[in-house]
Image (cartoon, rainbow over all chains, first blue to last red):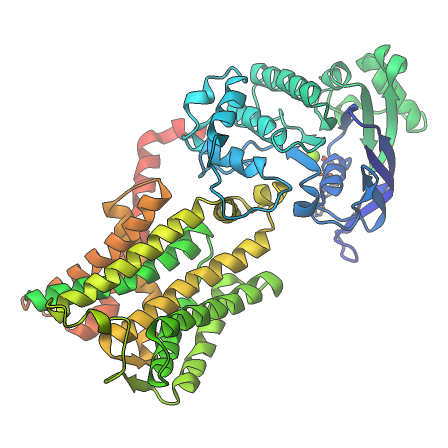
Length: 265
Length: 301
Ligand SMILES: Nc1ncnc2c1ncn2[C@@H]1O[C@H](COP(=O)(O)OP(=O)(O)O)[C@@H](O)[C@H]1O
Ligand SMILES: [Mg+2]
């Protein structure tokens, strides 16, 4: 479970470029819920995920994960609770290390790392079984460097890595945005499968409104650092993209918004 | 080249192999250009020499030299990690400070080891000529250190250190305390250089504050030569490459110095080494440029 109370984040405080990126986010996500997050560029989506992961510390408010107050924890400390996949396929793995080394890094997330062999025992075989389940034929390439994989393959392996250490929260920041449409669909379906199999509490930032409604069980819209829309259940099931736009406009006080301020998929 | 000169080159190459491996750790594994080694190498020599003169067991003295090197590395890491000073500058500050520290440790610029027992003493007089015993003993020590280091880098902790150097953001997202791994890695790197200094003092019979000058460049040269002659991806082989590179580099130097036709003097060594490293750093760039020109527009995607 994630409980966020009134968090604020300001970048460049006191400088001409000061940016109040999060302006009071209140949110409770029950265990196992799959939340999709949409919003225009600069709405604060990445900042919000960063605040949950510990990359940016909230200057006000409180963040609790499974009833533990983690507001002041840094990223490595939160990593035992939170797994992530980034937008840039290069960012979430080590290109110069092999696939199995990357998996070993992820498998030790949240544990003390000692002097035991990173790939000792039957770990290799465990990784092989896991990666075979992707159906990408990567099980024979465990000793290839990660950098040799395509963007889609890297994202698929990153998703697998996110589920390796048994953390219960998964943060996905536009993790399909750098992929071609067919690969993006494959990675999205894989996301759904991994989330389901591991019963992960998930926040997924996504470009396309269509996909935001098709995947997961709840949808948030961020605008200028606030949650302006929060739909789930039947209300959400009855929504389509034009509805979503209209709802958004109403939330914003009736002002019509131009289509290009939001990305419609 | 005489037999003695040949073995001498191998011996000095093996001593500096530890520097090469340390430089590999900082420059290649951690992506942290660390010049502290110019100070930690003579520091190791100074600490070892002074302790030997005080009658300390040579193995203990060598261990102390490694620990002193590690402490120097920690200072550099502290300046960089904690106080955000650029790594190069942080290491230059430590290096300059160490020059004074080394003078303090020895009390004078130069200490001779004449009658003191060294780690080599038990192996003299076994019927093998001294000039062969020395590289043999150093070889055994280097082999043990390289084996331990390879095992370390294959451990969970070592793998986390490599991830820190490759992609710190990813490492942190995987729960790795990247700062701690920088401290550990730079300390280890300089411990190896301190140990190299201790072996230098014991094989050459002296410690001198000026022996540190250019250590980093010699170490880098060895790493680069190693990567050229043994282009490997496995870490253990890369470490072996550093050792081989260090020996080959010394053999090449010895050859150049002994070939009268070239007309080089021992004092030209630093110039030649710097040129070698500069060329080695420039070549891959030229190659990459040529490659880009060849593939042309297709490289865009
Ligand atoms: N590190 C940073 N420093 C300064 N400003 C930032 C930083 N990160 C984000 N911002 C600003 O905060 C706002 C929200 O950014 P972000 O969370 O990346 O938006 P989104 O992911 O929704 O597109 C933007 O105006 C952005 O320019
Ligand atoms: Mg973003």
